[in-house]
Image (cartoon, rainbow, N blue to C red; front, side, top):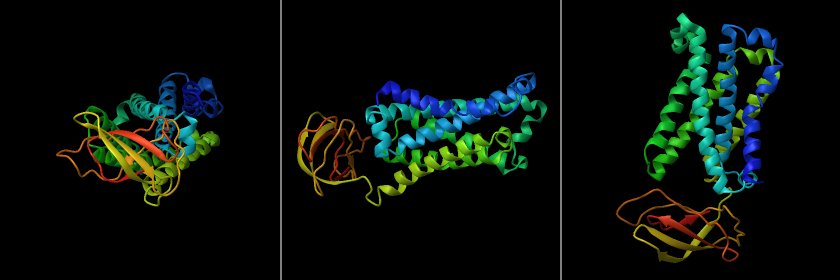
Length: 278
């Protein structure tokens, strides 16, 4: 799938909640007066949870998803843009809901509002904090992974909030089903990402064949698959399991844009490593 087609598919996934929302009741009532503000808040929430779930599914790097978007060179930019969009939409949801509540706005941000609502407040605060932490400063690779895992855990709160709050979903069951399916897909991606690697799913052990220094902080590492022959495709990646050489550890950059020979790959990487895995 080309980059343009992949972007259209992702846009359709994010915007699809608009379809069942339009059939949930009278549009005149929901788009007049103060109800219009509440409608914007609701749509922002649905679009936001769809964007967040899509970003997590892309981050899982499930092979079929990776190929569908055209490889890692497309997957990572999509993941980043969807994550940023989720933050913007979640913030819009809170802002417009506050405008709609007016004098009672403070109540919805307190635990007294109930966990179905307050869980959304907690999820929004954590989402903004973790995204700023991952974008505003350059984190080490291990800290970056921790932040991403925390974002995955925060998604659980956001999904609970979107499913537990009674509102438009009560009059549009299709929205509940759609949000539930997106949540299940995102959780499956998180499970694959968190536990699949430990179980060896989608990984291949490799042996270092050649190391060539290309600069002060960059080396080229040629590897041979230790378990079976690999057919590398555009966008395939290599990840170092340990960083033990060198005076300092820096963020990993590993890539293999095209195969040089069956079962052999080369990756450019900053820092140094000893053992490698697909």
